[in-house]
Image (cartoon, rainbow, N blue to C red; front, side, top):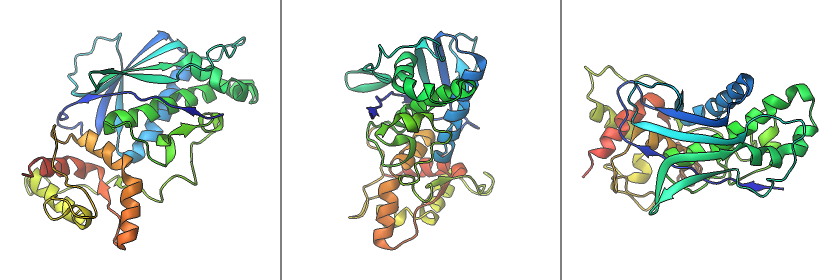
Length: 288
């Protein structure tokens, strides 16, 4: 049986220097999980989000935090985020996770129901060796969180057709050793690590962003100055300035369409290095 995953939300602004592509992820657990389970949850989220250029600094709402973050999400975990020896499926029809929305605006607060996730995957958990169940359950929780985080930072509830952002994840998807999605994963990611950009004293950020815009293949579909063409929409910010973290997520969410469009036009697919995202956002924000 396939379950649809519900969406979370995010409030984000421009990142602080040195935090491009990085955001704070604050967590709160109704019942504190075992350290091993928590570690697996974190590792799975980081592993799944890294190819999209998204990196997280994990924080607890219960800690005294003195760092000011402007890119953040808050995830609260209800229920027991652990494998229970006498668990039942009483929560089977409960949502796995959900968002808080006010007047149509997605807020930066999310909840993940560990009891519902456990009930959904319970039969699958019982079919694997007992010594590996905690790790498998931690991965399942991490995949639900990762699915929601991509919606958060892309600021859209629209799904794509690949990977953890696929609209439905089966029990096997949540419990498997690796979430590969061989038939759904694109051949490459638009956002990729490196190479480094020229030092700031050689090239201004906006100028570097324009150079990246041209070099990375954006012109073919979006026009010389982001004005839009029959092959791609205009890239001028509609309401809020582009945030580098959000821009990376939007590229990840739309990469299926962008890669297909490149194949149709018989041009090289767009390819943006993580450290170029900030300059690209500055360039796009300066368009009139």
